[in-house]
Length: 573
Image (cartoon, rainbow, N blue to C red; front, side):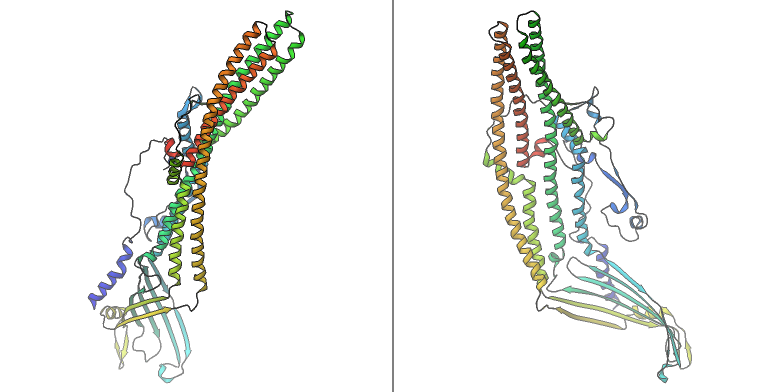
């Protein structure tokens, strides 16, 4: 019996001290390298000196547990300042290529930091799902003193007085096999003035161990770990959703870059137009002073120069607003040493567009494989399938097998035939571990609902959710195809627009040069020369807009394909 008790206690208690099957093992230390600089985790990080902020659940009594419970720390949040901005300061100017700009966006953008931190919630949900396997210890102690009048001569006193002090200690744990094991120790001390009591005070000890095994509902490791499987799938779905959000934020950030480029190129065009208008006005004024032309010829070049000045002023203010938006994207507005520095963007916009034909079906297939939002939607179908299995399990009858073993011991000082018999609590412990008084118990528990409307409705909801998820997946696939085809059309259209705009600039330049010569020879008046110069300015501005529009449409296509991060060499850690 002693050997049997040791085997049972080892079987029931040791699993609590071992890693559960399916639990995440501690990951070995790894070094992650990336071509993207800086890494996403380098800036815009929030820190909190709160022990509970850790995802590790310490064991009771450990140093980590003591700190978490009794000294949790400060709940104030500290946000790190933007990083590496000063690395790109050259000659007092913030000089950024598109690659450097996007690296700073990933490192310092607050909105991206929000998305990166939000993944912690589904990660914590996985640990929460493992919580069903956490062992528990419950303990109770009480003391009851009672005084009652005797109702029988056999009670040993006219007024029976007693002091009952029970103590209970119970260990319980759910194993991954769906078996619930327990071990319980009961200790009781009973003192009384009853002269017929054999032991006074009487010490009673019982030790019970057993298990409960579901036979139909909740049976097996798969069902027991189903919440963990759902939590892991939900976490992966969150990864895809966050990746899609980051893609959209990067599109917005790069759009801010091209806004500044477009405004600056247009400002150059407008300044050049203003210089031409001023030169024409100066020449007209000299001709009027020399009497070579009428005073009435002054108003057209003056109006043209004023319009050019308005365009320059308007573009300058637009550029200021776009630069402020760009600074916010990289966190430069948070650094007082950098926020006022001029911004220089080095990306070349004069490069001719790539004329490689775009294969529509291949790109659509590529989008189907890479789009993170589509991957998240596909996972929704898998998650609803798991929920259906969980609902089906809840509909099954609850039939549990219960088994337990109990040993008993009793002792204490007493009187036998008027003679005092010495004793104490040790007698009860020796008797209990002597395993002379044993109780074995086996039984079945059945809970069979005659009609289960609630779980039937849960199953119906799960089935509807899966059908909805399948329809949403198909709808999104159609939307992805349409998005890619529209993006391809926009790229091809803007690419052709750049080619035609360049031709228009060439012709406008030739016309302006020719009209300048004709004006110098006196063949035409100032009106035709100013018209040619205005047309040249319009053509140059249109070329800038078409070139930047091509960059934007190409960016949109990369986002629609889900390849923007790879194309830009960005790694989110």
